[in-house]
Amino acid sequence: MALMIRGGTVVNADQTSEADILCEGGSIRAVGKNLAAPANVDVVEAKGCYVMPGGIDPHTHMQLPFMGTVASDDFFTGTAAALAGGTTMIIDFVIPNPQERLLDAYKKWREWAQKSCADYSFHVAVTWWDESVHNDMGTLVNECGVNSFKHFMAYKGSIMADDGVLVRSFPRALELGAIVTAHAENGDLVDHLQKEVFKHGVTGPEGHPASRPPEVEGEAANRVIRIAQILGVPLYVVHNSCRESVEAIARARAQGQRVYGECLVQHLVIDESVYSSKDWNFAAAHVMSPPFRAKSNQDALWDALRGGLLQTTATDHCCFCADQKAMGRDNFAKIPNGTPGVEDRLAILWHYGVNMGRLTPSEFVALTSTNTARIFNIYPRKGVLREGADADIVVWDPRKKKTISVETDHQKIDFNVFEGRQVQGAPLYTVSNGVVKYADGKLHVEPGTGRYVDRPPFAPYLRAQQHWNDLNRIHPVDRAIV
Image 1 (tube, rainbow, N blue to C red):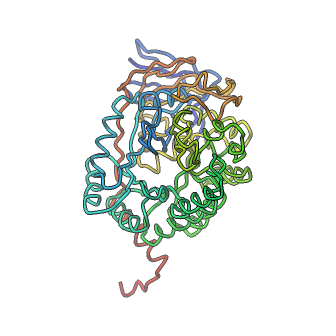
Image 2 (cartoon, rainbow, N blue to C red):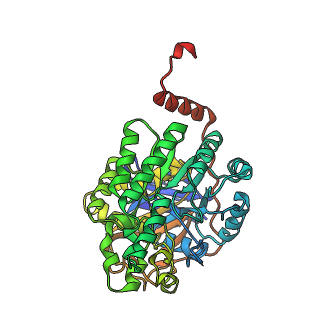
Image 3 (cartoon, rainbow, N blue to C red):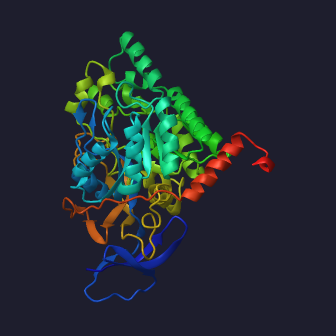
């Protein structure tokens, strides 16, 4: 069945125009004014609304086994919640246990994700190193559609990748045409500070930010950026939360280094005061890493988004309910790290970004969809509304108001960190692969209707050229003798 979206303002990252969109067979067939509707077409009226590419959340954790429990949203409930918020694709994480084969972990996550009702793809974490990891990275890129590898610099004793792993994994990724990503926190420092804070009698959630100050993030960001610079590897730094990491990225980009940065919408509007609450459950519900920061960091993040230092927005969506958070009742270091966000990302960014004059609608599209598609090599299949692209579309009503509440959430969670916030701007319709999955406040989803999205590697010639240019920038040589 064909679908016509008629009468809206089509917003892409590079331009805005009044146009209709015709979808058929899961793809966009035409974009233009006054398109002729074929027979038996379903029509969505978008007058007064923006019609934008569906959101792509580049950082989620559905059904994640972590810190002795499992995240409460599985791939069906999590992708359903994403669709309700206007996001039509997620990039989740395969996280092998130490000594677990990357391919074995990947196959396990693929099995879990078969119930997805929106499109999905995977980053794969490198948590240890031997020859099997080297070989599995090649198989994942060449046969499984993976073009990004994650490195946790935190979580010492479990999934942390030390510098030795980084200097082996990064060149292998470059060789394969994959991009490397990093969670930048100094895991050794965090481990030390957790023990010191606990030793001084701090056991509650307030110990979480005390053991992970901004300097811990800034140091790791600087270090991983310099490692990537020396090895000539493009780098994507996830969930930047503070001025220190933003400044590290700014310095690198000013020197011509290919470093990209991500920001979580939670860090844009929530500050560290939440950990001072006398309500233990409230404070624990906000435990995530990096933690929420002093309010002054929010201006730095907004400036970085607007100025192009940070290119994407995400959520690090990882839900744990109160009974799971209570595992750390006597020790903040045992509180499962994670908060929800996949359903509310677009509404939060629109309300506090576009409505408050910080972002234009086209910048909003770039930060929620297009830039992610470009960085992870699925543009123009995703991230743009034009002929031939996937028909992943959100019809956005800038007048629609809502109060965010766990009572109306589709996320499988008992507390929303945005609880009670009133926002203006929300999806009227979410279209995935040419099918209306969300309309007028109701989901129309079935398990297994989402597709796995292959992400091809980058071109070998460009990789070699980039590596040479970066190395020459660090160690200039006389071209006459080369």
